[in-house]
Length: 347
Image 1 (cartoon, rainbow, N blue to C red):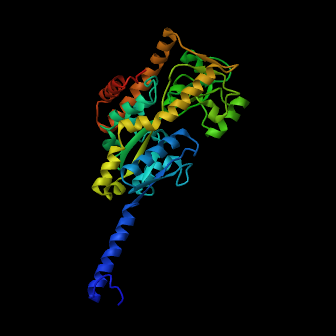
Image 2 (cartoon, rainbow, N blue to C red):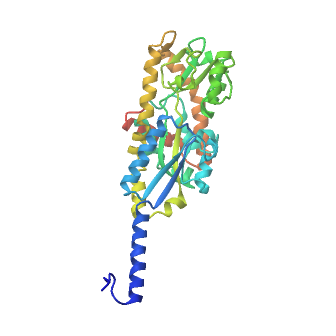
Image 3 (tube, helix red, strand yellow):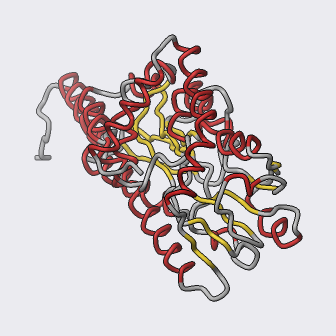
């Protein structure tokens, strides 16, 4: 007699088969329930891509495979300046946003770009995350701010001479890092030249620009043949917010939200940033030992002149933030200093 696996009732067998199939399908889906598209505008070989890749792997492991983070570097999904709107509008689930690319749009964030504020980018990223968490819902209400990242504090690299005092910027043509450094250069009588990263080396070699504000790793833009003089002080930083679409987050299960929340922390901001920071510090040491290059330090009197020259810019940036949101921006900056001090990251 044939063996009867499910019993003798055909209708009951049908329901049991359907239930078994549903259970198997649910189990398969649970292993990979959500794809999370993370859009980046940096190239694939950038060290931050490696840091975010490890972050994504940890998210997937912590979720039991339910959340799979997929990275799309090099502007595959959209231009750098569009990334906030891409995350807001759900074009991507998560995006790397450079607030400095949208001059005037994020004035609280601009406070971090004021000269001589940060001394490193790992503890600095942690401090920035802790500070900005209190203001993210006010300034970036359309998205969930998950991580913050930044390059090692950048400085001034020039072609022909050291620039020891800000008045020596007068008449120089500088490729600035963003609107805040651009405003500083202009206030000292310098001219700013806007140029894409691949153009910097050629412009410096041809004498179209006399210098750039850039992190220590000028090797990544292959400009070491022209940029010979490097201020040793941490002049400025630019930073990025890694933000999540709110509808994507709302659609996650409670357990999945808990995983994301556990990976959107100041500690993770520092961890993701570590490889980038290590590379920049290695580049700085390479510059120090490179024949024909000078990494110079400012005297106390020289540094005081830079701080004095930055004072009007500080006042303007704080006024802009205060007027926009009706806040005491001086107190907001003081809170940033408190977090930097607590993390040993203030210059």
